[in-house]
Length: 297
Image (cartoon, rainbow, N blue to C red; front, side, top):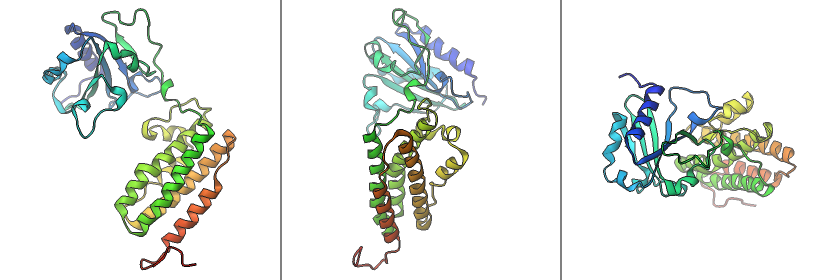
């Protein structure tokens, strides 16, 4: 099977819209609209079809068969366990992965709800079939909506608090040898605070004028090689000793970048949380498994 080219995919997307009078305009967002992204063969086609009413399209979902032979289809608005984000209310999405490797993330958006979706700075008009944007054209597509913002001092302290408080709670899971719980706590909470601080660190380095990317997508681009290597070292193996080591590596990295962010922004790093939690975790790591108390004196 030969993958369809970008031109073939775009011709298909626009021809489907041209043949259907219910489709008023075609928009694009995502990486293909981002002037700072280097194109590659795995870029999705993030498309919005603007319609008067999405209801007729939802009566029979087989209409999307026109886009090609699918590997798998996901419809978030039709899911119970993984519903769409609240900000997508009023739209309906077809996430189409095709057998030739191409992918279209197609969102049907009613005209009445359109303004909520065109606020994304990456949104651009591919075809204004019925002159929807004649009176209010969209600005040139950019990643302005995704530029890392300077944190307030309160937000900075909140991030530090989340990181160190969660690490303190992590200690008991590691002492109990609950490796899965510990890994998930690290990945779902601790790493979130670390990555928030990393984003601010990148913001400080580049005067809060760049986009670090979803889930750290562009960290390798914006971090010094040695800092990037330290970040990658926070992903430990599954055994308890490796998890403990990754925890200390993560704490060291957070401490380093948080101090630099504080210095750059004129904030005060909460050194007492850092020192107290580190000391506690080192104590718990050495605590015997038959200990009757956390501290005996």
